[in-house]
Amino acid sequence: MKKEFSFDAAFVKNLEDTYKELHRHPELGMNVVWTTQFVRAQAAEMGLAPVELPGLETGAVFVVKGAKPGPVLALRADMDALPIEEAAPVEWKSQNHGVMHACGHDLNTTVMLGVLRHVVEQNWAAKMSGTLKFIFQPAEETLEGAKAMIEAGVLKNPDVDLLLMSHGDPDMHVGEVGVFREFSHANSDEFFIELRGKGGHGARPYQTQDLIVAGSRLVDAMQTIVSRDLDGRETAVLSVCSFNAGSAPNILPGYAKLSGTVRTFKTDVQETVMRRMKEVCDSIAALFHIDVALDYRVGAPSSPIDDRAEGLLRDAARAVLGVENVKELKTRTGGEDFAFYARLKPAGVLRLGVTTPGEARKGSTHSPTFQPDLAALPVGVSVFLRLIEDFLLNR
Ligand SMILES: [Zn+2]
Ligand SMILES: [Zn+2]
Image 1 (cartoon, rainbow, N blue to C red):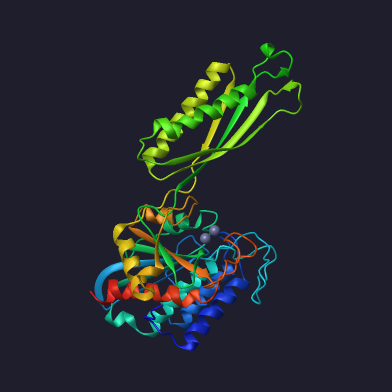
Image 2 (cartoon, protein in one colour; image 1 turned 120 degrees about the vertical axis):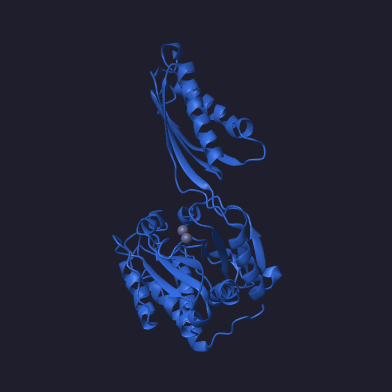
């Protein structure tokens, strides 16, 4: 691994201590009060005052303005944890019962705090053409934080030109990172379908409206939406994940409930799937003389990746880690509330390898045994510092 930045031991220890403190004090959703204060105290130590966020009690934003004019680059970290009891055998175990930084947002926050500290301590502002905005947001997991930050005006004053984030990834080793093309995450929607009709004796189906047969026909009919209603060059996933009905081998039920998930990337594809699902439900209702109610819930949107943002991340990562350690990642089918920013501003996502080289991962994200290798911290900081050099220093 090339070492573009060699940090002194005190800087690296500070990163590790910061991570451990954050890890010990996980908080949920919008309620990241301790974490917000901790981040603000760190910045205050560097001589930085937070930007006011009207209407928000948590979250913190800091601006470092360069001596010369230039673009505004925003770096976003999420700060919230998950309602999981920690089972990782670490000394810096969660002190909040039933809450754990199991998605590694403590790591994301530490990386961006490290970038901020280096930029401030080395007085990069004096030679920078442009502005850096550091965004520490609450409630990524509940998909509320980005929306709240945007409403509080985080993308304005100064207006953000490019927005980047980093997330720990246990499927890569320390020293490896990944970037995305086109989309980092999918539109993640849920649906619930209720069928109502006349139940009755299993021996006399002609006196009933058989919801088992109707529901089966419905599941079957939905399989042709992706295969027959979408352009073959587009992609989508439609999965029926539950089908609950009935209680005994001789009773035809009067109620059935199905649920499932839809993953798409483009809005027009999402709209086609929604429209066709509604038409399939209505036609099954007409065919079997039953009531079919579709409740389609739009979830986190897909995150479009900007070409320039992706290029900047890839080039900076290659310079620091070597070409072979920068992976091109497939779009993830999970959700990420960074999408709310990425739909408004050109944006890019870096996935930072956190598994000890030569070892298997210690727990997946969202698992009670998730345990990143702290050696990932200076790697993440290095990539973003190199990117800032390329984008704002060497103009
Ligand atoms: Zn998560
Ligand atoms: Zn996460």
